Length: 239
Image (cartoon, rainbow, N blue to C red; front, top):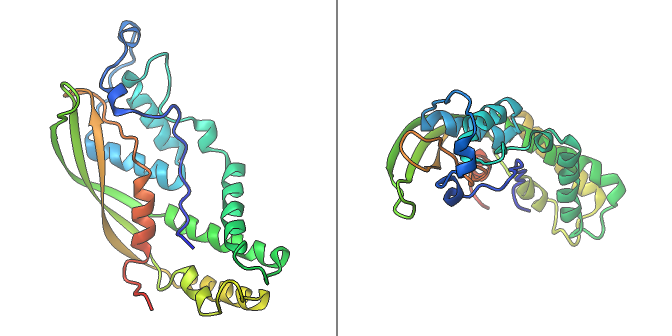
């Protein structure tokens, strides 16, 4: 059972090559006052969007990155980010995938508890706080005048003593696991979550700009979700 990764929604899809070539139409329009941010600030905003679908951070990035998009487009679709129904459906989908390997489990009885555990793990990850520390800027050899910034961050994340799949594995193999044992395992994992501490982990984010002084953007900001989820179990050793 893989760690749960709930991505934010990016619309339209970002392409660094596109960002490196702002459209003539966009240049011709009257522009709002230029918003200046350091790469570290931009990375922090992307982390907030990725981890917890932060609407305020998305709004700031939409305003900041306007020069990169033609036809008044936005980097983020705020309605999609606020779609809690879609998020709930993803939780249920992950639970269905896990239960599909447990033929002896009563799905109706077990699914609510499993969904709750998955949701709680993701909510803990969403509370992670990432802070930009430094950045290293260099030329983008693939894009004329383009720039690349490698941002170093530190993230304070929940520290868990065990993964859900490890706790459940001690209750039996998925094919033989029964409802009672599964629910016992989920109750034990709930106690693991109750005892969560915190730890600081390193993270990186690569940003791109079409030229010096131009807005920084990235299409891989969701990578920090995996970094945070892995960091939550950084000190857990496999049996």
